[in-house]
Every structure is written in structure tokens, then in C-alpha cells.
Length: 158
Image (cartoon, rainbow, N blue to C red):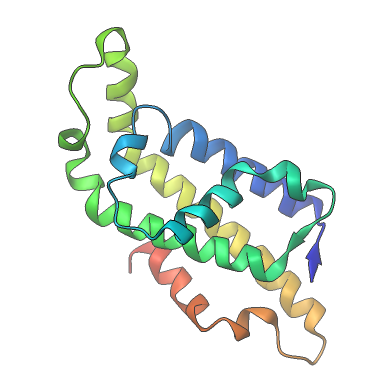
């Protein structure tokens, strides 16, 4: 099922912009790459956050968006557990003239990760609404992906 909803496109744009600027920027990326995530998970996150132009005109595959959301939720959960508590120690101390920017990125990482999780959760809720509406008596697509029940827990940490 293709999704061409303007609200979904704007939300995916916002997710990508926030991810590039506040999560996977030049100061934090080395620490992110230390996370034990499979390459396929990283690929799904990259597709969600950096390849909007490819999908903007032809639409998003709903099942693929669900898989990207699941990958992003796994990333959020792992980053909360493994990076937030000791991020400062995982990033090299020599930033030269960019030290203030590096320190800002480190100090704001937890709140930026929370905003990212909120955006992913909002995208997920909107897709569920569309999926359930389009199902019309059939089984919604999200029910065919058993791991999707984890998304809420992974994003909130509860």
C-alpha cells in the first residue's frame, strides 16, 4: 500500500532534519557507530532519515515505513541505555574551535533523542490510523508484522 499523505511526508521530512542536525551530526556520529545495531537496522534508519526525495513523489510503502519505524525505535531504546549515561566519555575530547558546539551536542543529546522518539511515535500513530482506515474489514498491515507491538515500549522506555 502506497502512502502519499502530505502530513506523512512533512513528518518524515521533520524526522530526517532533526536526525541529521541533532542526533547523527559530526560530533555524535562516532559514538552512534559504536552501538551494537545490525547493518540492516542502520540501513532502514538511513532510508527513513536521508532518502526522502526518492519517496516524495512516488509515495511510501506502508510496510517499509513500519520496518523503518521499528528500526528507529530499536535505535532510540539502545541509545537511551548505552549512550545517554556516558556519551561524554565516548567522544574524543579534542574538538579545537568546535568545542562549544561539541559540548552542546553532547549536553542536548538526551532531549534531542526524546524529540526524535516523539516524532517517530507520531509517525507511527498516523500510519496506524491510515492503515486501519484503509483495511476496511481486512487485516491491517501492521498486524502482519509481529514486532510492531514493541514500538511503543521501545520509544518510551517503559
